[in-house]
Length: 324
Image 1: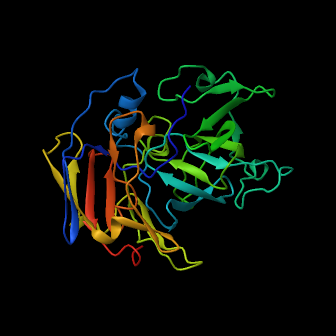
Image 2: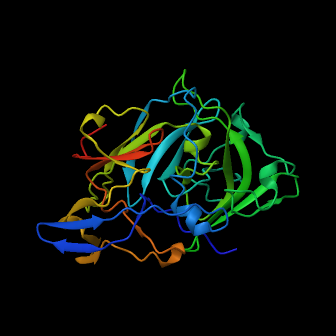
Image 3: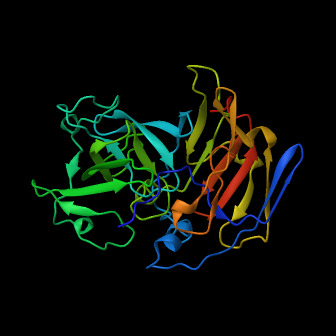
């Protein structure tokens, strides 16, 4: 099986047809509907925002606000388990499976926020007999197997060589005393090359959005700082955003012919240190699809809201370093 892409902070995919540079970089982005395919991974990947049913209207609405750390990834702390244990997770709208760090205590160095299953009364494991542990399960293209303890084992490999593997488990997320998710299927990584987990936010049926029946979520990414030792913070909302009255929305069902996003010129070049600046655009050849991505560099100082119920995405300019 070919490796899947390293989690990038995906927005959605476009084909560029015009670029002009003045005081801002004007990107004219035509939105094109792609056919949904159950057999082509790249089509399923690019249409994941469109291919799922809307969350049930009877699902509980979660209203959760949090700051996140921004260091070329959006790192949010979530309260997982009963009682809750704070877990550092990378917010990723391009991933399906969410996973947390569950490293064995005998394996140093242990991640800073490793989850201890023995301390949670709501933790449970998935046995080998679970349907997700069988091959060729729709929407779950990652390899699973049965380990020596008859538990469902998963392996998550990324294109840049990083990885995470462990057991599939069920666990709750506690946002408040009255807002607790049902047990969600997560990965419990006992081996990984990173010290944080992943919060999968795409529309696959195993994503956090789908399992928790999230109706909408939004984030505001601050500018990256070059100050030594300083990590900027942005804002993350689950549920209604009080700033949404000023949002401009794009429907994911009735595509307009063109959407224009103005990228300030200071977002075109990225300071990588020692006086070196690189163009903030990478190659997407590893995706296996003829696509482009609006990544987090070009989303800085923008509110971006995914209105899952109404299948639309909203935007608004903001000073993301000052908002919660």
